[in-house]
Amino acid sequence: MSELVDPSKIEDIVGIARAEHIHFGKLVSDEGVLYILHPFSCLQRHGDDLRQCPFSLALDNGLNPEDWDLYWDDTVALCIIQNSEGSRRPAPSFRFYNGEISY
Ligand SMILES: [Zn+2]
Image 1 (cartoon, helix red, strand yellow):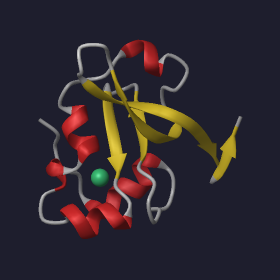
Image 2 (image 1 turned 90 degrees about the horizontal axis):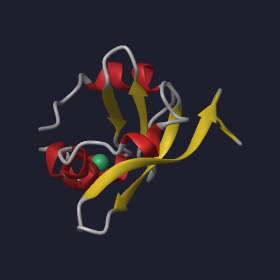
Image 3 (image 1 turned 90 degrees about the vertical axis):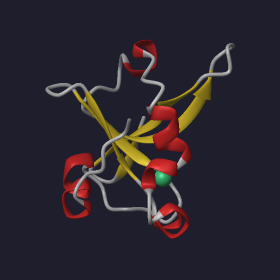
Image 4 (image 1 turned 120 degrees about the horizontal axis):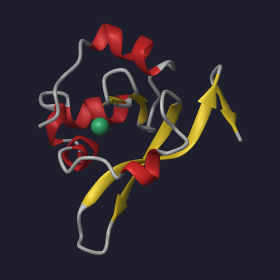
């Protein structure tokens, strides 16, 4: 089950300001934890219980390590990948460095 993080700390942990619509995240290697920074639109929709957000629900299925090979400790925009068994998991779509998309 996803755990809720102090909202005042999550931007610092993930390393980017909260966005309007994009879910950001950082997989912290020291802890083996994926921190999710939910955008304002998600807070409006699921503010009472962010564990109902699709990204939180996907995180409950764990991570596919292969998706994250090159993205440990990076600030990334998140997407959700569904495998052939229909299981959904959060995965990185692209990374950020100093607030800019980094290719
Ligand atoms: Zn969310």
